[in-house]
Image (cartoon, rainbow, N blue to C red):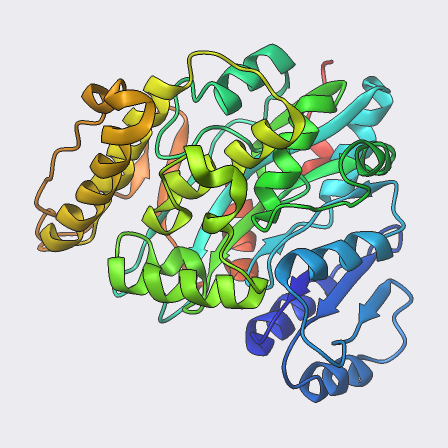
Length: 388
């Protein structure tokens, strides 16, 4: 779990993880804050927990990609999973990983559904999360993943790339092989979770997915995801990200023929990182451009206001007019819809596959509290069948 300047959430998540009594797991906590004394004192106060491997802040702050790099290098487990400092992962996912590994010895990547949680202050209104009612364990074929990830088949605002080191588990053997294959680094591209996903999906032998969630994607007020749909907030966080990186990756040489800077939105950001991967490693996948254009339209439609919508639409449209001579502009057709008035409660209840609850369910104020409350609706990890 790498972190930077979000000590309150970092400390809360560390407490949540250390509450586990498991002794067969390792926690790598990596601080990258401007004031190292806060986390140094916190870790000192924990005492001697042999499961902790703590990396203190360097004399000079690191970019995100370099901080993730040293975090991966410090991990010693047979399987590795990353989360953010405002997230949560159930340490008992280790039981599922071991059970799957027993049945599928050549599995390299294991993913699962995730819950969502917005910390107080991250959203004006209470958000919803969906708890799957099933616990199926299924194998996902690489050909299907390649079409969905690199072909943007069936994509929403972003394509499918759940198999990565982020909120999923990857075998350490594959991590080391990919380091040798790709630039002699664990992470190369500044958008580290996507960097990880593209490499794993391209190289893993077998992929297994759990319908039951095992982690929570948190959003604190300082998270980039808290600004989605808001042009001014997105621009500010984009500038902060590039300043941390030490350059604007949208100006990198390979971007000359891809007129969709990451500052445009979430879809453009994924497009940028994929374009880097395609051009750097020669990945060939035909027929993705139309689907990408449709996803850009969905990204535009996520705008918080009509004014934001028009700004985002104009940016994407300008890109599609010059990209491949405007060939894919007809597939970019966003439609603005006025937000529904917040004069009634959001739907809460059961649909055939999901239980819809508020993220404050049972008074939850942290990702751990939400996960524990939702766990009462889910199959215990020890009872999940692995019929593979």
